[in-house]
Length: 296
Image (cartoon, rainbow, N blue to C red; front, side, top):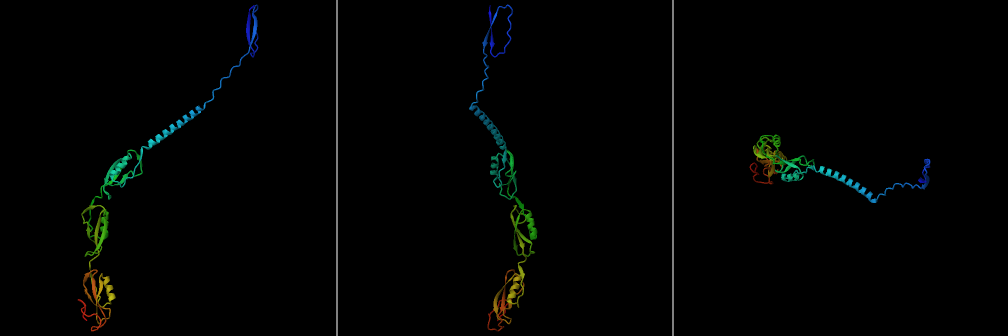
C-alpha cells in the first residue's frame, strides 16, 4: 500500500488530520520538522565621523555664501554714494580734478567776488554731503571784484559821504585838514568821483576841521601864565621872547607879536614880559623888544 508523508512543525497549532478517503489504500506517515525563527532585520550601520564633518562643512559653506552675498550687496550699494569733498579755497582746476576723482561731475559758475580770480569760494551741495555717483557739483569761482564807479562825496557831511561809499562796497578812511569849508564837510576824495576802481577798494576822504587861521587875542597886561593859557585856547602858542624893564609889575606881558589880527593855527606869539625894574631901572634886559616891544 502506498505511503503518504506529511510534515508537521513543532510549534504549529495542531490541525485535525484529514481522513483518507475510504479504501484509499494509503498509509500516512508524519515527519516532525522544527520551525526556524525568522531573522530580525539588520540594524543600520553606525554613522561614520566623516559624515558629521561633512554636514558641518556644508552648513559653514552656506553661512559663508550668505555672508558674501550680504557683503557684496552692501559694498556695491555703497559704491553708488559719494561724499562731496571740501574744495573751497582751491584753484578751480584743482577742485575740478578732486571732484572728478570722486566720480562726481562739475559745473562752473564764475561770479564777481572779492576773492582772488580763479579761486573757488563756494560749492553746491556743500562739502560733506552724501550724493549719488555722477551727481553734478556746482563750483562758485571768483572772477575778481569787478570795477565800480566811485560816487561823489565832496561837499557832503562826513557821515553822509561815508554811508554813500560803503553802500557801493567801498572802504573809507579819512584825513582831517584845515579848510575854508565848514568843519565836518568833505573837501576832497581819492580816487575822484566817477573813477572805475575794484569793488572793495579804499576811498580816502579829506574832512574839513575848519579854517587854518585863527584870531590872535590881545594878552598885553595879563600875567605871563594867563597869557599863555588864553593863546593856547585860541590855537596858538605863547613864547616869551624878552624880559624887559617896565613900570608894569614883574611877570606882566607888556608887548606881543603879532599884536592881533589873524595867524596860522598853531603858530607862535612872541611875548615881552616886564622885569618890574621901572622905565629907568638898572636891572633887566635892555635893548629893543621887537616890533611891538618897548625900549628900556
